[in-house]
Length: 185
Ligand code: CO
Image 1 (cartoon, rainbow, N blue to C red):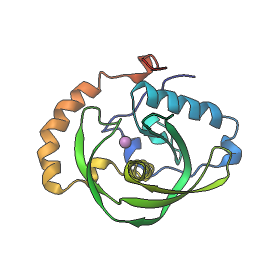
Image 2 (tube, rainbow, N blue to C red; image 1 turned 90 degrees about the horizontal axis):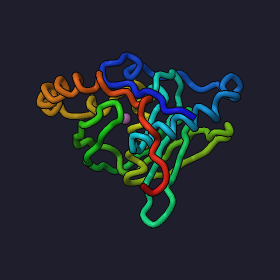
Image 3 (cartoon, protein in one colour; image 1 turned 90 degrees about the vertical axis):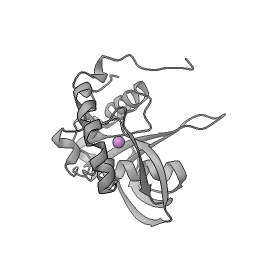
């Protein structure tokens, strides 16, 4: 397994719609790719990571939901689509491609997602709260949509100097040199 470099805001691949996964073509590489994506996400304590965030033009994401007093929930969504949505919730969100930046984003409070799992079997997920938010954030990534583009225009204007400052720092960050975070440290 290895930790992959995460693309930062400004890199073209983040704003391009990803290509659907062809299971027949990807089959042999998929297990190690997913393991690397989980390891990368864990190393930076993320909650979600889309393939295009690690430079791959593939419609797949991994998500981790922390559970109190229980094991984390780890979800893989391949070729996901939102088929139903309802409610709305304004909550603070961050993104591994924007380290250090957080902003309140309006999302649906509930979503139904159809996708495929790592075995290529169709799955249906009914999610709410944090899980629903993570799914929407990840599916947006796969559509080339970044969370800052979901913010009101005035907020985006206000964030411009912050983004400019952060961008300089991001150039120096390279996750591939990090050690993975393991166990209960
Ligand atoms: Co993100």
